[in-house]
Length: 98
Image 1 (cartoon, helix red, strand yellow):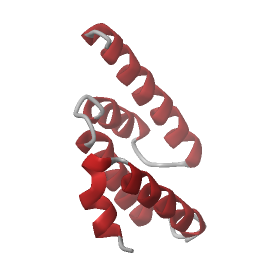
Image 2 (cartoon, helix red, strand yellow; image 1 turned 90 degrees about the horizontal axis):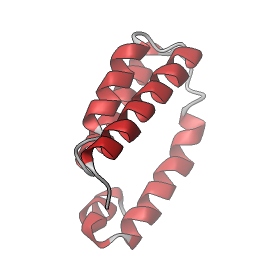
Image 3 (cartoon, helix red, strand yellow; image 1 turned 60 degrees about the horizontal axis):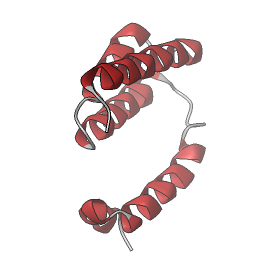
């Protein structure tokens, strides 16, 4: 598909973009989270999922408001639909519910 240089470039761009976005919304240590996300993204499926879990936990403990909860339900529903359609993620879809 693509070589290691392309994958590295994509992951560096992802980490940079996420670090910038996280700094805009006021997350502490945005460079740390950007580097983490770019590094974790090298591991297919598990890396992005782990990044999502870590950033969710950090966001919940950092911010006092629950405005993000309004977005969580549609995002979870979208994740469930994707997992239903992608056969290797069937176990995740089953875990998420009916």
